[in-house]
Length: 325
Image (cartoon, rainbow, N blue to C red; front, side, top):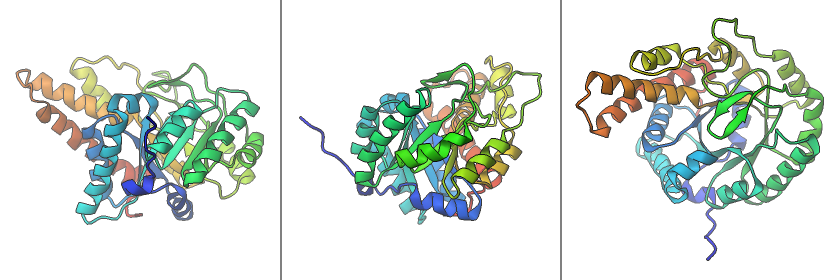
């Protein structure tokens, strides 16, 4: 029996078109936070309500499987309801992060996602174009936004893995955008997936703003996306290690550089690892200090509070999205 298709508007969600137009005009970036469970979603939405920030809540293929497709839809509806009950009007987009096939993107579109990413960055250029175009042709029938990627980010996060970065070639972006019809493009300028972005003890290389600026020239006014943009907050790394973890050498992207990127054509910045670190740090700390505790509401509640704090900081200080809803 074929599942009934659900349009994102039925869930009260928004796509990214108006979000990105406003972000580019206002010189800030829309936060795109990954979530895997209820507490993370509550924290993200709460922080964005409190900072009056538009938000993209996103899930990977693995997170979608973990949360369950049907449960995820109701979680998204719950997020929208949280906003309304708070008297807020912030727009929320539900986005598939790093979709690896047309079939996965189609399934997400049919189940109410308002935006999808098709990641063919590992493919030869023409194959990447063909795959992205196929997704666009399906998605645009339902007014769903499509993100694609040129260039490869190093690192490991969820089901995305690459040993080395391949910088985006600016001379390819114009042709790619024209041929595919995508709504935004993720580029590689030196960010990296996961918490171990660079070698500990060595200078962190600056982002390649020259590549970003050349891409802007070739596709003026077009939305650009940065993946792998967690700053790997050292406070959380130290807490995790203090209470039994082993994250020696975890290093991320400078927040100053991210703010500079957000003031350019970069209008969506993905943050996943920082959220994971905040949650894990507080859970480890809580259980280490109170080893008799076994009520998940206690330690997950503390983790949720810390994630609210982190998201508010990112919106206000790094992305510049606070007060923009």
